[in-house]
Image (cartoon, rainbow, N blue to C red; front, side, top):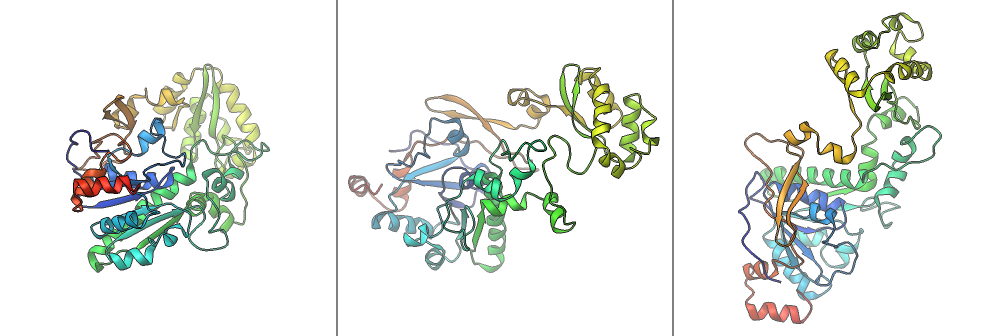
Length: 397
């Protein structure tokens, strides 16, 4: 398929880099999206006839993940397809893949082969459990990593049993960590001239994201359990009822605790020995929460929000997803972007969550159709129209 229409020019802090994208599902595309949005020339390489079930372009998920890319269809199981990829590697800065460990080596496209071909190439590999080790050959899936990485044991109400997080935490974490590693490798290449192999996995990401919960075990010897909507180690911090719903309130530290007690009309509580110190409050949390809930239930969330914020106490509503995108601060931060799809019209997508002074992410183009830029990419490699037609006829492109 040929390209349909001109695309706006690339710009941004990464516009000097070319990225070859061999990823699928979520972790890999999350990694590559960071480069595509900040100006890199990303070429997504897809099978000519993708029957994997991971390439349904009609879904909002797929459209959100793969914007700002070019698409080249290429059969990497054929000798000609692999040779074309290697020619692309010659001029690439980065290649990202998230096949199961060993697949790239069996194709003759593993790190050793690609590094020998282009020593400056940075390769990013995302797997379920790591490139080596006793679980390396296992298939990876986000929820499996959430369970094995401990997250499901600390998510949910006490005694509820394991609960998965509502987003693909392990997938997203692995993708973002891999992108971070690739950026470090590109910086180091400026000094050494050498590329590097960056490896991340869903399990590594999930364990790393345990953060202070992991430290509680590693340093304190405490294995955390489920705490529901209460903060695991501080109180009062959690969900409290109001006259018209529920809200989050976080009144930790002595100053905030005393200010909070003034706002709720109980200035005596800081002098109560059950609630005098953070440790006392944590030990007596059920009683304290019961007392607070009786009070917060008497006024609306908006009334409490106004009073608590005036006292410098963090708090806020518990929004549904539609309410999130109606929030004026979310709108102000530019978290929603838009691309113009040739058949679906304007599509709203998630924008990048960071601001860089003097730079901005660009939403130049929607997710391409499969092979939309095949002719364009192959022509740049020196293939003529007859050559490209022959590749198509042989099932290579």
